[in-house]
Figure (spheres, one colour):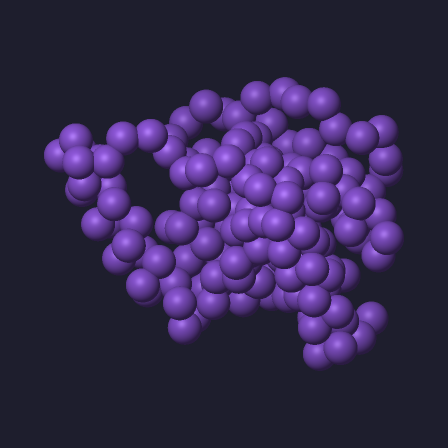
Length: 152
């Protein structure tokens, strides 16, 4: 059964995930390094992992299956999940695919180098209403696509 995994520590679209998952009756697992409030719904669970480097990423990769969906802004995690056959989407609604993950990794490495050199400061801009809207639309499309290809 289709399952949504959320790299939850810094995910700004958790409420949107809850709403879409509720509409489709899907299970959601939020994976984080610390406790957080989640809706009191049977289909939504929080998995708190150790504080170790990449502990949440490792847990997601270990538990994700083909045709599940992973929500993350973490490009190396996205790459690992794609290799396991999962679908992956960033919080702005941009899907990660086999066709674009290589350039995403290269861009990440370039920006990391620029940050280390002091050329870039600060993080990504805050999500806009249009980003949230695009995320909702893309998540809905991804779920429908998986269901068409793999009916329950």
